[in-house]
Length: 543
Image 1 (cartoon, rainbow, N blue to C red):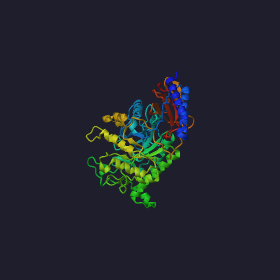
Image 2 (image 1 turned 90 degrees about the vertical axis):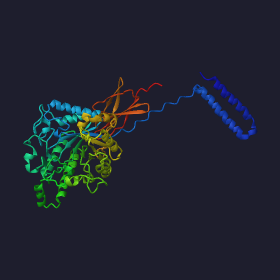
Image 3 (image 1 turned 120 degrees about the vertical axis):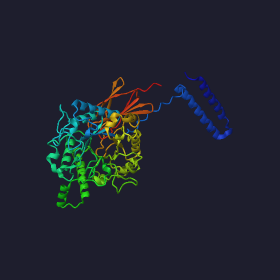
Image 4 (image 1 turned 30 degrees about the vertical axis):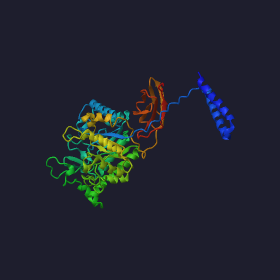
């Protein structure tokens, strides 16, 4: 019903103004002003008749589109040497080995980590079937013994990781031939027996001589074999190049980082061949050159076989002595294990760098934030910087770190612009939830899921957008587009002005609405490239 009192009020105004318009004492200006008011009042009266004399309710503001997806490389090392992480001990039944794989990956998924770096070659051996090297003793208790019933551990790790939307990087030790705690004898097809001149005993360990051509050839062949046969997301090397030095005479426990007069690595035969062949480098530079050759050839080999497989390096965390920030002191990997990491960075021989920053922030001589800033300056945005965190220092000893040290280091990495992720050493700490660290991370630093950072120098082409189909009962199915496959789906659920973000593996395309008013989904490929987003309006709440 129209409001009659409002109509009467407007009519009175028109009549009054009409009378005033007859009074010409105000001149033309008064006439114009009065006429304008009459027109305005008449328009108001017309509006009452047209719209029912009610003030229209403004529409509720539309839900603003979701923000960019959070991005962070969240990874963990899974060490197989000495059964640090997996298998929990050598010689377990195959069913238990496989069950431990699932347990680890389920914990990785629950923590919202998005990558696992699995050690597949701890000592010139293999955690997968290989025609080049023997089965590792850490699997079945004896080097060369295959699992019974037979299975391929690496294939299971890859399939189960990808099923959960988790990257799997294969971690190789390039030169170690036998760990000092190994119990099994060399298998007949181990390089130490087939090419004994290329393998040197150094203290209680055995080491491939980087100056021997077969050492480089074998490592290249092993990595190429894995890249060719397996759907790995990355290849990863750790910090073991030439061995960490040992004392000439060992009495009790000796920290290799504090040895002043080390036993020299026994590479005299290969050094002599080099010099007799006309080589002009001094011995230290020659050793560094040997490592340079391997790193460069690995990067080229990997990308020639599969251009989208990332190559990552995880060196010791302190740089060259002549480039260190003021106040930073300690072991020189450049002089002692002949790793010229800064040179590798300058030449671009990697896709990501994971320096092992295994010191607390309060250790001024090896300060975590100072060293992180140092490596950020070296990289200068050319590729990824994902520092390694010494999470295993959380333990039951008096020297244990607090869980707060790790969460602070994560926070410090996040405020460094060049840093887009981090890696925990190692999985056993997170699996055991030592001192409640996993619980703390799940509720705090990792409360929200994250996509991996993009790697545009390898591939910047996004997949096509998916299609969303209603199934009813609060469920939506994501239908993938043709072409480049998705590894994950980025999902935003909108309620009011709030967006909730999650990541779902492409193997699980069913989405629960959970009371959302709007659903937004994009496809994400293996390198983090994101498709155009698709929006599906859902039932909006009644006002």
